[in-house]
Amino acid sequence: MKKEHTLIVGGTRGTGRALVRVFAAKRHAVSVIGRRLPPESDLQSPQVDYWTVDLVDKKRLTKALKDIVDKNGKLSSLIFCQRYRGQDDPWEGDLQTSLTATKNVIEQLADDFDEMGEKAIVAVGSVASGFIAEEQPVGYHVAKAGLAQMVRYFAVLLGPKGIRINSVSPSSILKEESKKFYMDQEELRDLYQRIVPLGRMGTAEEISNVIEFLCSSKSSFITGQNIIVDGGLSLQWHESLSRKLASLTHLPITHQTPKRRK
Image (cartoon, rainbow, N blue to C red):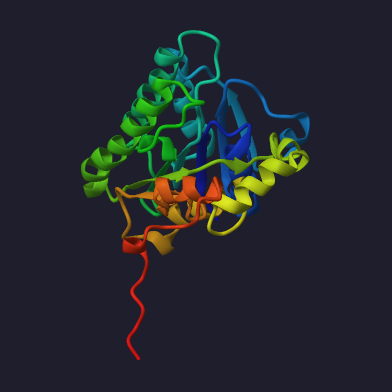
């Protein structure tokens, strides 16, 4: 029986690395593109093939995508997890890595989806597409906002081919590479317990679960959507959240819920 084929762009760390394990466990043929190889322990899975490619190098990327389809067959799922981590101009780097590379890959592979598969594309965005995260550069914000619009555009353009495309926007999450740092910072853990309605940070595995759903038949009539996965953090009014953190919880009487008459 022919295996389903999932391509993960940026699958050597963080959420992408967690996704590789998810789809390998489902017995997919998993192709991974990254600038570097993952840790040696990840290279042992017979389900997974790695290609080291700089996404900005269009000539090498084009060849790698052709080699991937030739080796593992037409795609069932295509997932984008990459982000710019270079030392050059972050504006150019973010736009080229998150937007231009994503566009180039989708356009090249649009006719390389298996007619019998789910034909799903998922892009990992960020809540920074609609909010400002001062620790991130302007290019990151613009790239993530542009990615959300690109998802909507291709949802309309590729819908007639039966290809669905959605995005997932996480807030700060625990990744394998950063978990020890957060676990060692008691004050930081306490902060997330206070500000996130669900009382904790999310994990790369939880983001992977949402992506897996969007690549499955259970989401067969969902396309062009952005799913925010942040434990409810972005639902709160910023002023109320600031008051809570500053322990200024007393609200003016006009904001209080009226008492019921007896």
